[in-house]
Image (cartoon, rainbow over all chains, first blue to last red):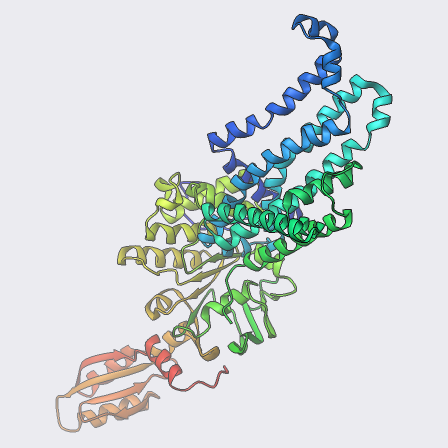
Amino acid sequence: MAVYDHGYKGYDGPLMPARSRFLVISRYGLREVFASRLFLAFFAFCFAWPLVLLGAMYLRYNAEALTLINLDSADLLEFVQVNTWFFQNLFLRAQLYLAFIVVLVVGPSLVSADLRNRAMPLYLSRPLTRTDYVLGKLVVLGVLVSAITWAPGLLLFVIQASLGGSDWLLEHWRVAPSMVVVSVVWLLCMSLPMLAIAAWVKWKPWARIVFMGAILTGTAFGQFYKEFYDSWLGSMVVAFDVTDALSASVFGTQGTVQMPEAAAWLAAAALASLSAALLYRRVRAFEVVK
Amino acid sequence: MSEEAPVIDLDGLGVRFGRHQVLDDLRGAFSGRAIGLLGPNGAGKTTLLNTLLGFYRPTAGTARLFGMDITAQGRELRRRVGYMPERDAFIAGISGVRFVRLMAEVSGLPPEAALERAHEVFFYVGLGEARYRNVETYSLGMKQLLKLAQAIAHGPSLLFLDEPTNGLDPPARLRMLRLIREIRDSGNARIVVSSHLLRDVEECCEEVLVLNRGRIATYCNLAEERRANRRFLELDLAAEREGAGSSFRAAIEGLGCEVAVVNRRRIKAVLPPGVEVRHIYASAIEQDVTIRRLDYKRTSLEDIFLQAMEGDDGRL
């Protein structure tokens, strides 16, 4: 049917595979996110720290460059130890803070507007399930978080491995999968609660406030519990404690938080499951009033 | 999907929300090009649409669209269905054409085809000039047309329209009804219109299902009803001579008409097959009778609706 032919006609052309249909939502979501120049600038800023670390790694193995900038190679070797701690704390921890801001900024805009403007019946009247919808939105956050956490982390790891040689690689091979696992677990534990809150609150600024409020309240309560009862149980509601414990568990290092590994995993699983359940309750074509 | 199967086949369909039975044992098969769902507020029209779309799970029985079960084959069905919801529904922050393109892509169209279809349907519904505007800036009438555009963008075989003329001014309403009739007459899509406005349903539907308190109050084939109405006549007579009226009645009875006398000057007649109005006029001339007024019976949808509301047993 051409534009000038104003008549209704069905469509009998080719169709995209049903299994990847949720990626349409992700693609549109990402395009909307990057339509904001402010966000684009912030996202570019998120790569500054990995670039600094990349520079340090390069200088560490390049005596000529060190001479050019009048830096003593012994000082730098002492200062920049490229090891598990480097990737776990210096790189990943810093990037996860930035990822938190990304989730806080992008998360609410993905879901709350759809629910506020009653777009759910439009999505769900098509060959798309609620799982597809949630997955589509989650992929948006997944792509953004991955792009600033494990993806540059792996790049740094590969570069370091090429510079440090096979001995370094054999000693630190666990770092690469650990970065991916910690990033993905963190993504689920932050993104699902953010999306769930956005789905219930339906208003972006309020969703952000409630999310921050939940984290701060959990932290305050957890710290109080830890101090008052002298028990690690309080850490289970402190997001940063759980992240630290999980990270230590995955990287195989000594954590700063006195909390059993299993408890950290349990807290993360409970948070993600509860958030997913709450999100599912809200992502419906229509509310059923019983 | 079998095109020979009824468009909607209700098989004891029931929906219950908590203790509230919203739809109760709905049965019937409907095959018209445009099916109207009528009923007072709270009759279950929107719930029926939402159940057919798979938004609500039936608590009893089932339903089939084009022979496909709404529960077992929901995903495949929704690929062939277009839905225009009653209330405002859109995706904020994007242009109209982008919104419709997204909806077409979610329905499975490749990006290029979806973009092409989005432009086409915008021109088709008459919003061509506004397609690059943000959907939030659209007026109420434009939003209704936008909802129709997104519902037909992927070329569905079945179109569910929930209160399509809600909030429209008279010209916009006429435009919407014209579009619905055009889609119906194109033969490319069957239409189910849910409305509480009898006139709208009467203007664009061939079959009407009247719901009341979650049950089927009545079913009416408007096309057949209209054809049948053409056989019922009401005549006002003026006799030129004494006894002419009686002989005229006898004459048309002789043609095979059933005749009922209302009073001395007015009669009602049912034309048998093969007898046309011109035969009645011919008899009147022969019998020196003047027909001052001839009317066809006009059973409006309103009559059918009110009759259904008076006593319904919930069955067809």
